[in-house]
Image (cartoon, rainbow, N blue to C red; front, side, top):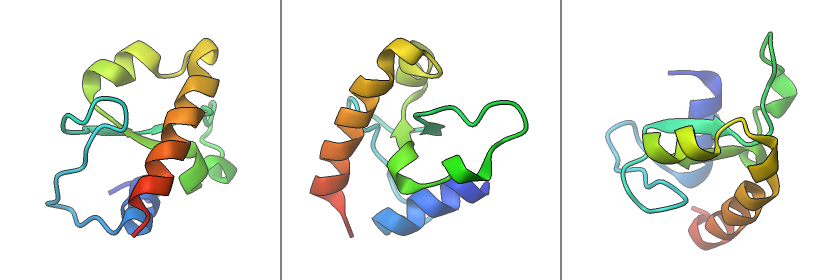
Length: 86
């Protein structure tokens, strides 16, 4: 399991076999997305809960790594975080 996935799961109290919802639509999340992309080489400073968001494949393709959606994703993630802190 990738380090950023472990950080996300630990913060929200998820186990590996838990259902993890997409923060946008509630379907099963398949990716832990970096809201602000790590860039080439993978910046470790971006592996924080504030920058990590669980998303389904559809929404990862629709919103992922597109600068025009960063503020929207941060807003959605902020609400999700407040409602689901473990």
